[in-house]
Length: 151
Image 1 (spheres, helix red, strand yellow):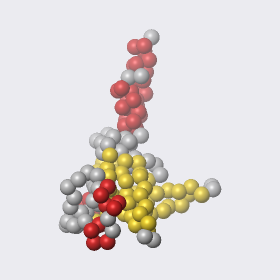
Image 2: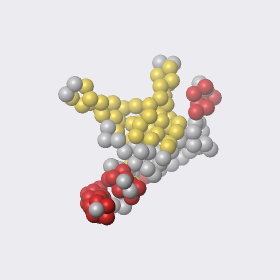
Image 3: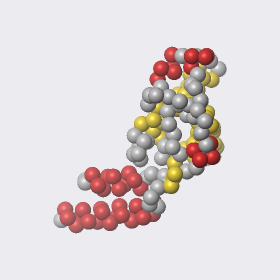
Image 4: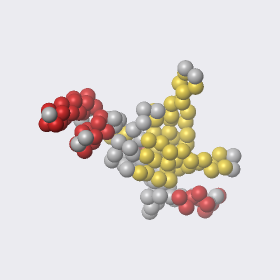
């Protein structure tokens, strides 16, 4: 398969609008959880310690919080259909992309210096250039073209 086809398929899976999540942000992630035949929404609030492959359809971020004295980390795919909403609560000043050093710290040494930001603007969804429907049409066109070329 051609790389362009794989890229088009991956881009078709992207959400049209996502929040710009950065390391050091305190976020509330609303996630769909299936229990039996029903779905429920669960919110996980913590500090983003890592963001990977930001522009890709496989963009991922890791959120950490301390619950009952135990550190808990969850990794989320940004474009997953199970991630309903990501809301930025607080933005902190950090100089690294990976804040793994927070794992060994607790109390005052684990604090991050907050910086002022426009919360409503940060939580506004950035809309992609193209709608997903158009992308799906392009995927079908490209696959037909490559199949015709292969014959």
